[in-house]
Length: 194
Image (cartoon, rainbow, N blue to C red; front, side, top):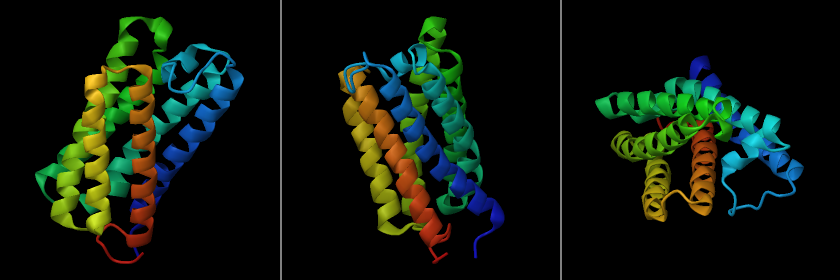
């Protein structure tokens, strides 16, 4: 049986995905002018559903940190790549919290925290794919899924951060977190059944 700290970390990752999805959906339902893929996600942070969207990104960002440190860390192996991955995912979580605090009406700082989240998370996915490949702790599924999401994120970069690419990037990160969390829960951090 895996340690309690890892079970709590995995639960944080799963909770991040679920809470963001629920609160994002609530925010969309409260803003009749929001069009999926045609508006930036952050537009919801200054709309009628701002409370839900901003809470969603703050909660998800806060939960990313223990997910990185305790949930996914054991699966990344003992090398430097795992340590860097945990640090970058923690930084991405802080940037995501910043998105909910420094909304679009905060000026340039919103762009800094928003791009900071996407670029840090993208680099993190590349490093995580390498670490998961080396550790083999989640089998082919873990590193293949992570690599696909990383390559998808790279493919979105030429779109220049338009509303559709932003939405697709966020949804792919959420899906990655959810599926990796489920895989960790089922397989444990060392590839053994939980």
